[in-house]
Amino acid sequence: MPSAAQSASSSSLELLTIYEVSKILGSSLDLEQTLREVLRALSYQLQMHRGRVYIQGEDGALRLVAAQGLPKDSPAQTIDYNQDEGISGRILKTGMPAVVPNLAEEPLFNNRSGGRDDLDEQVASLVGVPIKAAGTVIGVLTIDRISDDGPSGHFGSDVRFLTMVANLIGQTVRLHRTVAEERRFMMRETFRVQKELRPVVAPVNDVVCTSPNMVDVLAQLHRVAPFKSTVLIRGESGTGKELIARAIHNLSPRKDAPFIRVNCAALPESLLESELFGHEKGSFTGAQKDHKGRFELASGGTLFLDEIGDISSNFQAKLLRVLQEQEFERVGGSKTIKTDVRLICATNLNLEEAVGHGKFRADLYFRINVVTIHLPPLRERRGDIAMLAKHFVAKFGRDNGMNLDIDHDALEVLNRCTWPGNVRELENCIERAATQCRNGTIRVPDLSCSMNLCNSSVLFQYRTMGAAVGGLAPSMSGTAINPSAPPPANPATGRPYPSTPPAMANPANGAANGAPNGAQWPACASGCGAGSLPVCGASKPLPPSAIAPLPTPQPAASAPAVPSAPAPQSTAAGPDLPLDEPESGPLRDRLVWAMERTGWVQAKAARLLGMTTRQVSYALRKYNIEIKRF
Image (cartoon, rainbow, N blue to C red; front, side):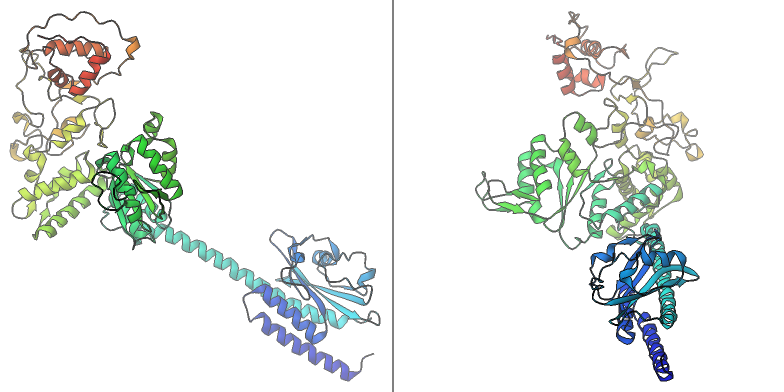
C-alpha cells in the first residue's frame, strides 16, 4: 500500500499535470498538434506512455488523430476503426472506461495502430477512457503503463485522472468543431454576398446599363476577367464588343500590360499574317526591317481579334497553331517565338452555321469558344436607351465645351425606335441632333427622323434569304421593302400613286401621326419595317410597297430547259411601266420576267428584283438563260 506521503506527492503531481494540460489545450488552434503536446506531457509527468487519441468523424468512423511515440506521417493515422472493433471500439460503443492489465493476453487487442512490438519483453497495461462532449461520446483516450515486475493491481487513480483529461479534450474538440462550422458558414455567406453585390459595387467604365440582361453580362465579365481563358464575344454590330473586351482586360491581372486590337476583316490575308505574326527583313518586297507582330507586342497582355469570323480558311489553320501552342514564326523567319497572350475574339456572324457550311474550321471554333459572352441588342434593353442617350449628350457637351440637354419628349421618341444599328446608331443619332439643336436642348424636331434623314434603317427592310448582312439586325417585318419598285396602284383610278420617298409621310396624316397641333412630321424610313410600334416615334409608318422574299434557288441539275425568250417590248421599258411581277414561283421565271421588262439590262433587272447586279449575272449563268442583245 502506498504511504500517505506518496499519495500526497502523486496528487500534487497530477494537479500540476492537469494545469499543464489545460494550458496546452488553450495555446493553439491546431488541434492535432495540441493533442500531441498533451500526450507528451502525460508521458513526461506521469510516465503514461504510448498515448493515443481517437476522434469519431462525421461518418461515424473512429480515427487516430494523435499518438505519442509514432511519427506524424505514420500510416496508422489513416486507419478507420469501427465502433465494435478492438478495445478502443468497445470503449466508444459502451462509453465506459476499460483497463487491460496485460495487453499480451487480451484477445481484443489487435495492435492496428502499431508501436507495441515489445510486449514479449515487458508487461504493458492499457487504460482507456471515453472522450465526451455535452454527454456524447466523441472519442477515446488510451495510455500504456509499462512495468518489468508485472501489472499493478491499482488503476483507479489512473482512470480518474484520465477521465479529467478526457473531459478537457472533449471540450476543446467541441469548441474547435463549433469554430470551424461557424467559419465555414461565414465563408459561404461572404461568398454569396460578394457574388450578389459584385455587379453593383464594381461597375465597368463607359458601360452604361441597368437592364437585367446587361447586368448579367457584367456579372459574367467580372467572373471571367481574373482568368486566362479565351473569351468569345458575340453580338450584333454596334453592341459594344470592343468595349467589353477592354473591360475584361482592365479587370484582369494583365491590366498593366498591353491591350492590342486587330480588325481581321479590315486587312487582306497576306497583310493580316504580317500584322499578327510580324516579318523578317527582306521576307518580301518592301520589308526593309524586322517588324514585330501583334502576338509579340501583346505578350503578357491581351490580344483582341475583332471580326474573327471573316478570316480566310487558309489563315484559320495558321492561327490555330499559335492558339494551341502559344508559339509562332515571323513571315520569312525560322526562329520560333514564344508568346503569352490572353485572346479575346469577337464576331457578329453565326459561327455554328459557318462551321456547318465549311466556311469556318471546327477545330478553331472549339479553340476560341471557351467562354462565350452574348451581348444583347439595344432593342432588347430598352430600359437603357434613355440613360445611354443622356450619357452621349453629356459626352458631346464635354467634348465641345457646351452645356447640352435633351428633353423628355425626345427621349420618348428615341425609346420607340428599334435601333437596328444598336448603341453605335444611337450615339450617331444623338451627335447629329446635337449639331442641329438650338438653345442647348435637343428636342423632337432636332432628331433625324423628324428631318427625313434617318435613312440607315432602310438597310434593314431588305431580307436577303432571311439572314442579316454585315452583322446588322435583320428586318423586323415579314416582307422586304423595295425602294426601286413602282408605287402601288390606286384601286379607284387604276393609276399608281405619286412616287414619294419611303421616309416621307402623307401630309394629310400629320395629326393622326401624333404631330402637335396638326403639324406634319415626316416619317422615319425605319418605320416601314416596324411591327405594332413605329421604329422612330416621330410618326406612324406608311404601308410599305412590298415584294415577296426570293425563294431558295433550285439546283442546276433540276432546272428546266430554257425556253426561247420573246423579243423585248422596248429597251426603254423601266420601273415606270405597270408591272405584273410574279410573287411566287421559280427564281428562273422571275429572272426571265425581269430581264424582259428591262430590255435585258442586268442593272435594271437587279434593281427591279431587289438584287445586286452580280447576283443577277450569277443567276443567269446558273440557269443557262441566254441574254438577248440588240
